[in-house]
Length: 295
Image 1 (tube, rainbow, N blue to C red):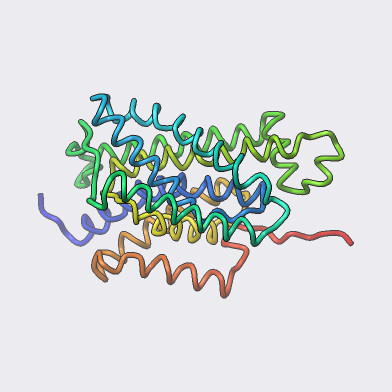
Image 2: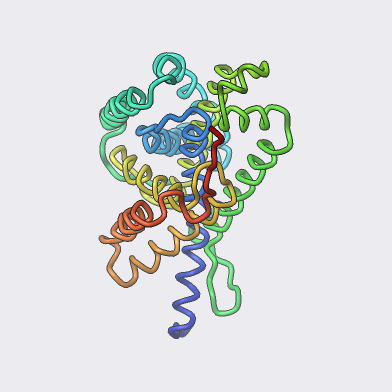
């Protein structure tokens, strides 16, 4: 196959879009917690890496298909989320600063624990589709990235429908708008906040399992995915699932072309630059809406 400039451009775009969908799923857990609980979970990246390791070891030790391993790793992420919420987060929801400090401490604990348990060697999970590609005209679409993208968008679509079409989802959105008013209406605020935290760790575990199939990972990679989540969240604004998907695609495209022109070692420069520009000129995000409160 001859790679012309147009084919190369298209190939980069395909890879960027497929990875961007996974970045959107990576971000959604952080967006949920911040939107509903007003908590900035600095340990979010470690939950993603935990999901990657859980999927990896379930597959290796039990000899299961990686996609079945993800289904078994998600409950492990839910248990971890329940323990963290019960023992640490639930008592700190009245403060903005305390959860940041506590979750930073949790980041250090989880990172050190995973280094001790699983060493710092890079790992990746090989699937039956890892080396497979589908030819679409002159372009090659990696099957594993296509599956990960499709699964990510499907989960985000299901989450959007859950939050907009079900009673529990609407109650969660009401809490995100005004938790005190929601409580006066009889909505169990603390219970649904706990549910949201556990749901966010499940999403992080799922995205971690997909990351394990797409990229190499190690315990110290958590902050890198936290940064990517911040960038996507800054692009999308809070509480905007379609915006999160669009933000993930923008980050994926920026990283893909940034890696090509600047080198793979500088791919995160694009993410840092996007974050700085957005915070300076568009702090509500590209897709965020201006909020007006009556006084």
